[in-house]
Length: 281
Image (tube, rainbow, N blue to C red; front, side, top):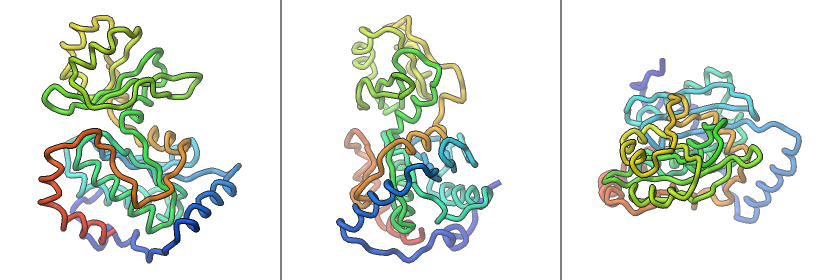
């Protein structure tokens, strides 16, 4: 059990390191050198997803899951994320500096959740001098559906009958985006999808739109496998293992897909909170 109420000092102390500063040329050269040196070697990954209600953190070496922490009940991710990382890293017998790469769900999803996950991942990657990889939250969800033939349609509720969604398909074993991630009215989205065969909708929020889906696309299949409906840290880690790292960590941002009213309100109320949060890490 992770003690969420631990003091800020005890929670963040393992991750406090003195930063080193590089010019852009040095930074890019270092990343390229790491890729050259790593050919034939395993990559140890810390994966983080706080893009929605589910919080999941995983530690993987290549394709092997070393440890994973997932909580699906609604909690304040800003309070639970760092304790989860700290405990998981300790439980698997590693230290923060043992990782080669930090992988984070980049969005779309909950505005606040994305800010927390991306800020944490950026800070860890920068202070520890590790690679940073962002992965689409929708792609990570679609990647759960490994046995599905046809188009996989991950869905996050964006309120007011709008959704964050996209269309993915496994092509020769590789998950490929067929329709790019987007923010769209559900009715409009379903009309666009009518021309496709073999549609498979996945995500906890799909149930809210079941009647709409069944009325417009009666032959569509809706996922009923509970493990596939939520983000999986190990799946996210694997996608991040195969992706190229960011070359400029400072300019890495969440992918919100739309300007939300909550963005301005959240920044007004939490600017100092975010600054303090980064300093603690």
